[in-house]
Length: 332
Image (cartoon, rainbow, N blue to C red):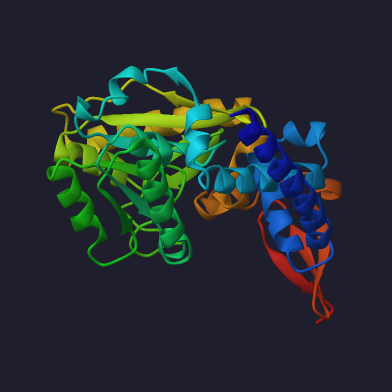
């Protein structure tokens, strides 16, 4: 196993070098818009982080964490290096029954896939259209490799949340006794991430109003299965922790009451962990897609020196407003 760790350290060093170059490139290209949106998200939700790190440093940490999460799933042996925390014992044994695992894009966030495959659980993974199309085969290969390594055969399926029959397939899988992995901090489903309608639930995250999908809570309510919040973080580059919170049991409240309660609880868990491990949360890249932008209108929370910056896309220059996320072309 020491040879495996040495090999992983070499890979991590290579990733870090690649990320450093990518951040330099990002500051010189149209990708600067992505960096500015990330910076705006942090200014609105966790401004003290910008007092400790420059935006480019934060971007480098976030991109490194994102790439490490992707590489973790490529090695079956990596599952043996996982550290467990919290109420994980009920979910070691595949005979414990199906559950809905509510996960987050923090730390080694794909480790839950390896965990369930290692212990022979039958389960499904819910992803958006882009992940389904671009990473589906790789994720299936990961489960196959882990099963082969441990001599198991998990029944595994990937469900495209944006497909017309996505919700029906999720419910059917749960009723058939399969567990399910869904990610809380992603507004996926029919209509994609930019969907905003009455089916979204207003909740609070890091002191701001966020529009959240109720899919996890609805599945728990309809299936009457426990919802198990699971989150990961890194204590070191090669030390990934998988933390299980106590299961949220089904109850007999109304669907609306249950959805509000569960959604609030799930985002409180995310807030606690993002506050502890802010440089490991991939959500900084896209949380603005779920924030209620009305709360930023007609406000002057940022001084002008921190509120505006310029970026160039092709031959055109723009002024980016970190308060409203708007980019206005200069001298068109």
